[in-house]
Length: 412
Image (tube, rainbow, N blue to C red; front, side, top):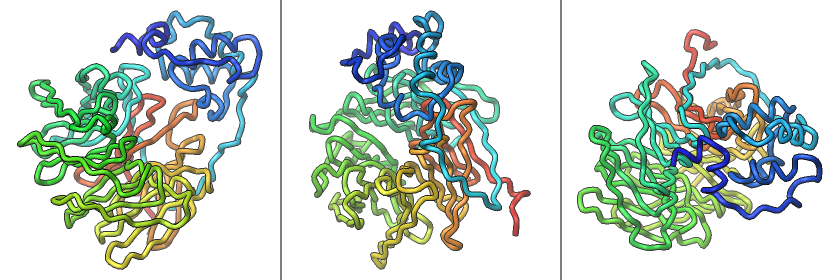
């Protein structure tokens, strides 16, 4: 599977799509764009970009695939620059504040892998999945040393997470499996879904007892895997097309799930898998991800309305705040970190990392570094085990990052 990431030619062979020249405006280079760029992704990605000069378009493309031998890249870049020049249509609203942070970054050696969802294992090493490359990568953040582990072809691992016993779990979003990797031996064990409708395991967590809970977005299910018995239990969501997405476990054991297709949060009993629905006002609300604060409040991103909010399970109180960049900011990832809510505005260019202080009800935001181009997207963030840093990523630019607070720079 590595070859399709190293050359555009192989990419086109392995990822055929139905193309239409009508998707792009006429001009010299249009057909090359359709056959080259749209061989990997839809033309909508081009329309949703911030727009670049010809040099900027070439830089952006170089983060996706190896351009050696690419057909007429100068013609492609000139066409894109003429029809999709720099613009500020998706410029964010930046909010200054007293907190200062630092970014550390690492890039995987395989271009176009769609690096995502970094997580820290018990030994302090950082893992992420290269979804389009069918691999997971282990990083020693102290030395920068990386090791890649190949996954079964077509696994398309969406999320990777680390268990207390050192095993690495991933969701086989492309082949309908849950997978377990033994880092010591490289051995992979696959657990197929018992229902063919559950073909896209999405996000996963490992409970303290070792059982793995996961969402199945298109299949509209939540699953539980017992690694001891190998048994997978599936339950269907009580709301049609709820598209369960993010998943977390509260301190009392309750499993919480966000709904990317409906205005609901869901709570599950970890033993019976009985589901309770919690409706969020406004039908256009939908939740990609969530996290749980120490006081039990379930914080979530309302991606559909450009808001963040919380549900208090004890009182059923629900509150929301508009994100600084407005209703089209599309908050995506979220984490409770350092007594505040951190999330990103994925609909903006650049993708913004936002901090919300729930006591002061105030925001502060920073552009997530992506070099000379603005191409997110941060899809998941998690906190290191000592809770000293955030782990984030920029999937389009193949970059994993660690965000730390500058304690010496904090004001009173």
